Length: 441
Ligand code: ACO
Image (cartoon, rainbow, N blue to C red):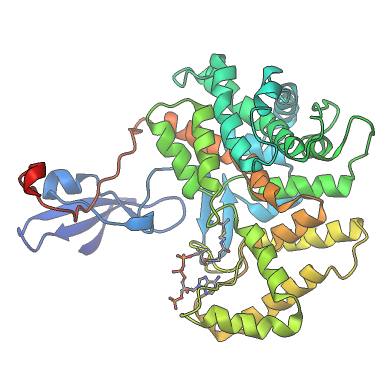
């Protein structure tokens, strides 16, 4: 392959020349430059012109779509939503404002913000019949199992927002999903611990309302701490979107066939459930408990370096970030303020995590491979301190990521080049062979 750059006037037209050494055919592919990030070769003509597919398991070098929502520079540790740095959004914004930004592309002005908050608040209740739907689940069902089922079932409750060709219905579905997800998540939790469901309250803000529905009970009126509500809101902001990860790509792929948005988001929740994606913060807590004390850190680092040992340092490393995950830095700060608020001094797991991070970052193995703490390294400690059981960690991730999924789904539906997602394959099975009758096998 030969990469050339031609300048025509002010605009640079780049191409990538591909030569098939078997047939001698040559193809010039257009190369596109995004606003940020590496150049992207448009290979769509590869099969029609050269009769060849590309092979890229795990899509490590494949862009599946054009997007204007989120940009990640993994080498520099940069995460931008619609051009705004995640650190700035976590510091100066709030989750609903970030939702508006992801959905509509700009920060809302005062009137837009009020209107959006009002709309979301007015959609937080779920259809009353959904309460009985919950009782079909076993009490010991994992809350993620309930989430997959109940969110998928929303398509059976909200028929008037399932027509994907109607922009108004798409908007209503987006608002319903963002508004009702905290209610459904809290109901999944309440059901699993045998407590009555708490209705949402319109006088509370988004994160505060979620904490109320999760931790309050009808016989008491516990006030939600503003520090905890702010920490929850920040956690939601940090997980709101992360471009074309496994669950988002799942939502886009499911949606590319024309499936309704509720079914697509249920597919995203299923993909998020796996330990390699949404379940890693739980694994971090288990690992810290297993390490137990600071003097055992070298022993576990040795295991992490050993290629014959399957042990990996959980919460370290990332497919895209080869630098400090910017979300981990914000979470580390939030952890301190939450522990302060809760009056927790010298939390042993946090002390252990800080020391583990310090030693690992001085270790040549981790330095050489650019393995830094990722978002999951501190989130488990924080969520546990806030009172969430580990089974709820991925549910909280799903709640926050819903806006990212729905923004990406909407962008896909509105993209004129959108078509059903249908990857090809490198077939290595049997070549055509004659059928053998049963008696002759
Ligand atoms: N501990 C020890 N070694 C590691 C770790 C780790 N956590 N992560 C990567 N490595 C090593 C690999 O063994 C490999 O070494 P080698 O080059 O000598 O063979 C090298 O670093 C590159 O690792 P890959 O597995 O090729 O990187 P990949 O991008 O496929 O994996 C992943 C990324 C899955 C996140 C990995 O770093 C990992 O397993 N981390 C622990 C689990 C975790 O924290 N997951 C959460 C990710 S964040 C999220 O999903 C929200």
